[in-house]
Length: 320
Image 1 (cartoon, rainbow, N blue to C red):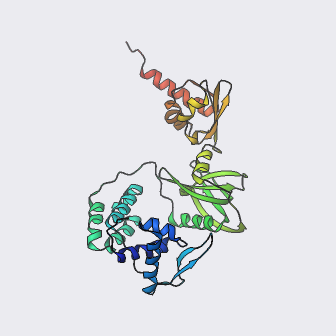
Image 2 (cartoon, rainbow, N blue to C red):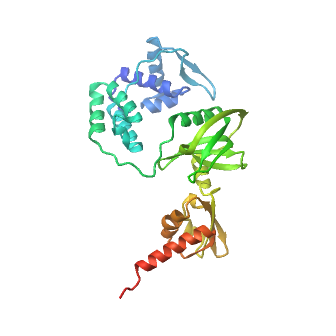
Image 3 (cartoon, rainbow, N blue to C red):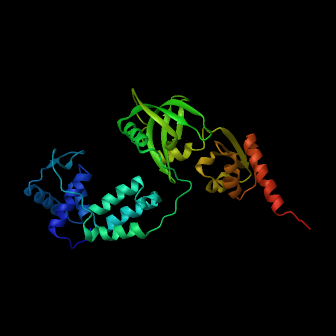
């Protein structure tokens, strides 16, 4: 934090920290303010003198927090924060540059509410920056997403209606562990009681969410992103099995988690998994691996690889 801020500015920053991070200790507050712990406590005293109730508690779960019912002043943005917000929104949803877009309307309200000296640059950035849409990103229904997030937060099992890319629809009771955003797509990481296994569902393909009376406990030490990556290549319609003559240490850097699980096999290794799109698996994933391989299964992947081989062979055929 800048050292040339006034005591008033640091006190307001202290208030903001306590609002967003209840239970902040004096040491943590000092680090965020860039001051000593003694100075951090002084800013707590300034807030109390101004009539803002700040409670403190000792122990491992102690720290400072605002008293219940505290009425806080409006949120304030610095110019860098405002610009960062606009950039993040446009990066994640390029259509937010359009005032008719739902997120664009919300962003416009935020920008208009900013003081002129802060909001002017943010408004110019939004008006003149152009963002190209990501053809692979998806936008799930906000209401569906909200219901799933609430179920994750309250650890409540839900029944979901899901429609696959092929148009098949089914219902399943799931324990929603986490919502993970990966490369512009939103996934529900969960334990499906329908198949008694971990599943990763695209949130944009969830048609309905209904709460149940059952609670659940997520796995201890759960790393949602890591578990999602491990399971993206599991449970799809078409099985895959690819054998490499190279050792796993050489092949692993070229294998994306959705391709499946890489295991040692003799002097080489084998990639076992499943896919919903054999053509993409062959053309976009396997074609990039710079090692000799054999596709032992399934039949759909073998056919997709054969089609790629025929197309490339024809491309370099001697037509003389």
